[in-house]
Length: 334
Ligand code: 5GP
Ligand code: MN
Image (cartoon, rainbow, N blue to C red):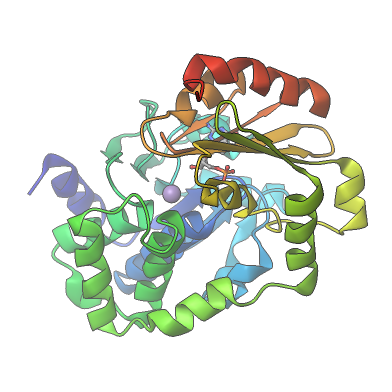
């Protein structure tokens, strides 16, 4: 048993007030790992609260108990109180306190034991116990492993399993990247517990609204530039697009990946003109590290092949900045 698992076992020995928090704009892995862990901890008779800094996409409404999550943007006092009262705070799918906005400081100075479970690069040193595995497909895969290492596989059920399986599906692009043997071991174990992955995939992928596909069409037809010299795809959406297409939270999720379907495209960027900030999503193939680009030029970070960031500048300036850094990271095609 590792030292971390031993420490965690001791902490969880008696019932506790537990807060689970994940990152802003929670994605499938943030939500899946949070509710997978929450379901498990409830079975150990802990009192568990899930907090997200901002709202989640309606796609995830099918996750059991998700409506009980506290959204800091909507109920800041309630979120702060939960963190104040917590004996234990689990931080899932992030390891930099800037990923939870104003709650970062509160977590840093909270009296609670802080436990991070995360697969992002460069974890910050704030937690008391750190489970960091940058090779893991997802935080959900890591939560599965923690439960397994605690000797509690028998506590898994289809509801916990579906949450964790969702995180693995979404963070691996349906098992297309970031996988390793342990990813499939976890998937197999969860399927054995009763996870219906066919049902789950329909819930995750086949529940789009018509306007979402129209938006994708607009992006592909009118908002995409391919810098073929370097094999880079750039897409952007303006404030006007947000109005014209009634873009809601989560609607732009996944769009950046379409550019990687082009044979020669090695890197893709989606640049979003949001009300106060320009958000950038970066994706790459093989050895090109968009994490470095996000960190160095766009106040962000993430993974080698999937990163993001945000800057206070104009849309035009951000596109210009990106184009300028391309030659530093990608070879010119002949
Ligand atoms: P996305 O492009 O889907 O928003 O995010 C891709 C990856 O980059 C995720 O792993 C996410 O955690 C990370 N990421 C996105 N935005 C930011 C940001 O503003 N700061 C940092 N540090 N990471 C980000
Ligand atoms: Mn993740």
